Image (cartoon, rainbow, N blue to C red; front, side, top):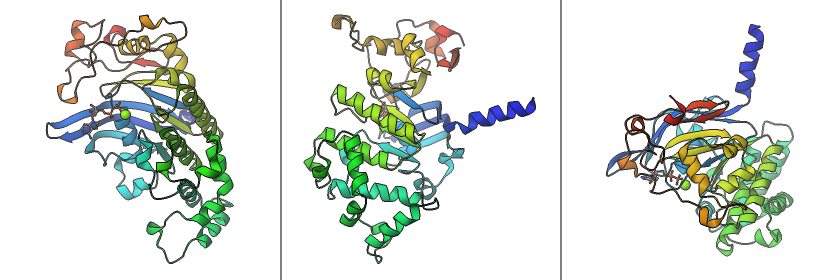
Amino acid sequence: MLETVSSEVSDVNNNRLLAISDLAIEYKSTRGNLRAIDGANLIIEKNKLIAVVGESGCGKSTLALAIIGLLAIPPAKIQSGKIEYKSVNLVALNENERRKYRGTEIAMVFQEPLTSLNPVYKIGDQIAEAIVVREERSIPSKGSSEVMQKVYSTRAPAIPPRFRMPGRSLTKLFRSEILDALRIVRIADPEQVIEEYPFELSGGMVQRVMIAMALVQKPALLIADEPTTALDVTTQAQVLKLMKELMDEVDASILLVTHDLAVASQVADDIVVMYAGDIVEEANVYDFFSEPLHPYSKGLLSCVPSGSKNKALLKPIPGTVPDLSMMPSGCKYATRCPYVMNICRSRKPGPIEAKPNHRVACFLYGQ
Ligand SMILES: Nc1ncnc2c1ncn2[C@@H]1O[C@H](COP(=O)(O)OP(=O)(O)O)[C@@H](O)[C@H]1O
Ligand SMILES: [Mg+2]
């Protein structure tokens, strides 16, 4: 009996890729420390696509940057909590140790893709470099060292690794994989695109290139922060579906940050709703869209156009996400909530399991 229980527990842990617990993040500003993530808890299992939704300013990008360890770029600090990736607490690692995870185990497609491509290298060379990073990571595994031998032989040995530049010969070496990656993200003329520089491409094309670069690295967790906003709606869904299929093949997970609930409904396994730095609802995609529980989620859904909905009936949520320096002390949604009660103004609701596997942080469901 005991054995069964412990094997169940280890099954659960084996399936777990990332576990965030009690995470609090603050931005330093002239107005003092501003809390952008206020005690988040989240588990990402292997081979799942989690969509994080919420209006602009709710902390989605901050959460994403914290996971990939790039919070040092904005003036932000993790105040408390853990981000455990395959049971290693990333928050406790130093920058050198963290770097080993970035781009290889955990990759990210950014909201502003142009800033993450190097303007002076051709697209093909940049994708080649991403493939090299992957091959370097997998050196101990069988067969990969042969590839690395070829990589090393194409590079001038005198150049120390940190000064290495993407090279034409690498692009030649990995040419068919690079072309395949570009075709997968539906770039119509990959032969031409590998010879182009980032500034020669449209915003949508750059986003596709970024997705291709992330995919060739075969990370176990891909974080995609509004990765398809520059694409039209149909292409958005296509690219995301492709991304999901490819990640399925390698049993990887995706954390998709999007403000677009229609896109989330088409590709996600689970939905996580963020409001003003809090995770306010979490459920699988069917439960969420058939019965959203949090008043904020209901508000978000009433703004989504759908085939059956008359455009005149779409109701934007009145008001805006509160500024970090003026957060209400109780439930942060209280100022906009049509169901607000007295208790909501004085106490902050914690997440409760209102239905099986459906968590919500709202006093309407008891506490
Ligand atoms: N560099 C920064 N300095 C101060 N506040 C910031 C900074 N970046 C983001 N914020 C604030 O943190 C909150 C969450 O922002 P963000 O994570 O970008 O939200 P989202 O991605 O959901 O739009 C917002 O209130 C935003 O104003
Ligand atoms: Mg954002």
